Image 1: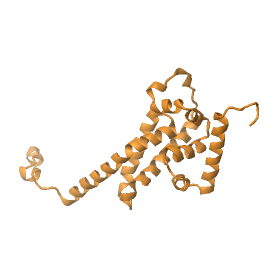
Image 2 (image 1 turned 45 degrees about the horizontal axis):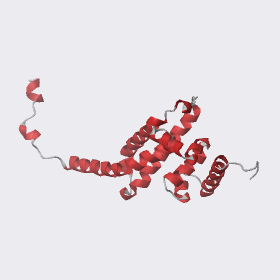
Image 3 (image 1 turned 180 degrees about the vertical axis):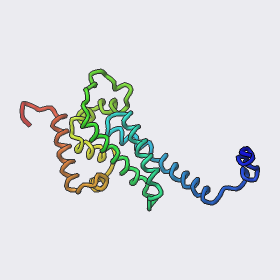
Image 4 (image 1 turned 135 degrees about the vertical axis):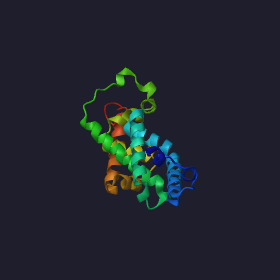
Amino acid sequence: MFAKEAYLSTDVVRAPLRPAIVRERAFDTVFATALEAQLAMAYRLAGYLLADSAEAQDAVQEASVRAWRAWPKLREPDRFHAWFNQILVNVCRTRLRQRSKRRTVDVDDANLESGDPFRAALARDAVGRALPSLSRELRMVVVLRYWGELSLAEIADRLRIPIGTVKSRHHAALHALRRRIEPVEGGSR
């Protein structure tokens, strides 16, 4: 009796998809297409924000899951880039906050850069080497400005802070980077 009830007839298997299922699959395809277009940029941005490729991969994955869950609430699908970028920045900020609470050991002396493209990229130039010396807030503004190619107003919007705060952090970050990079000539500037 159980086998008879559990058996699916060929009519059920060959039945056309219900309109709701067709809409869901189209919905999934649109999301997947929009996300795929953003993944390279997202990975690069997360990598420079977090300075670690494994952490960047995890952040992009987490942001993708959050975006998938919130996708039905997105009012303007043509603004997917900005919306997803905001989610990614929030995930990176959370990870940076959590990282600052954990005790870490500096392993830069172990030369682990060869396997991590972001550490290697940052180590290639003076700015990259000086970037980790900035506070989390200053580094976030610099990376979004120069690697994320956002305007100061867009950064303020992404970080949900006033534009004046972004400008002051940008100025302070550039000042700190200059001090760290430029050699002091003759003991004075």
